Length: 305
Ligand SMILES: Nc1ncnc2c1ncn2[C@@H]1O[C@H](COP(=O)(O)OP(=O)(O)OP(=O)(O)O)[C@@H](O)[C@H]1O
Image (tube, rainbow, N blue to C red; front, side):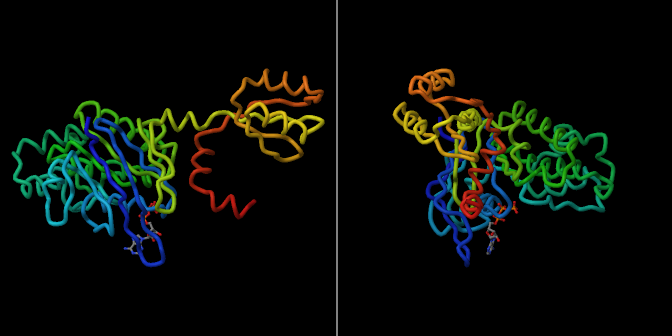
């Protein structure tokens, strides 16, 4: 099946070298794609490129099977988006905010009530947006993006500024939205925790480059536990482990660290068979959080090393 969104070698460079470089994004239809990266990685820049709000220096964007070209809006017809904060009229009520955009888009009057119900704001529709919580404002912003019945929804850091309860509500709301409307959701975040419980697919961006793209299960697979062992002959143990097809590294206090291919018991047996006394052997789980850190902070680690 054609992906809902894909880019080919998409690049935009700013003065000073920042920007995004040669992005090959692929968002399968029906996916919840978490676009992760630390602050300044280039997430907003990418989303602006995807929406034609910024011109690429090179590369292509395809949305729902249509190539995005300058001056041609057709590719964006079934795309809804919320980039940064929603632009809302604070002095108007929720319903009036939706009504303004509904008229601009020439949609039937009944669509406002449908969207209010969809985003859970029907009971607060008569209240001024000034009185809305941040979470309610986000939902109203998403409601604006939903008016035109998009098949692809792009949200830039929708969880920004929400407290843990607000984040949980938003997550539940987005999950229901995708299930009930049958759309594809692409959302950015700098917090893995926000994405981890929601996304089916993940792209990890760091300094403008895509460091990982795949399913969440594939990312988890990368986070296989590490084996840490201490023994009385680390150099000899290194040799034995390399011979066994492992890739050990010397870590703190003469311990060895590896992501094992063989079962831990087999590693132990081989070391002992070579006359090496094993004092400590333990599997250390690698959290997704630390993997994310590793994918996005290689420069920091190089400096620290
Ligand atoms: N118009 C511009 N001119 C020059 N540099 C820019 C421009 N827009 C963005 N940048 C730079 O490009 C880099 C990526 O910015 P971007 O806003 O896309 O990152 P981000 O991942 O969305 O970050 P955040 O999570 O902080 O919003 C930053 O270093 C930013 O300063």
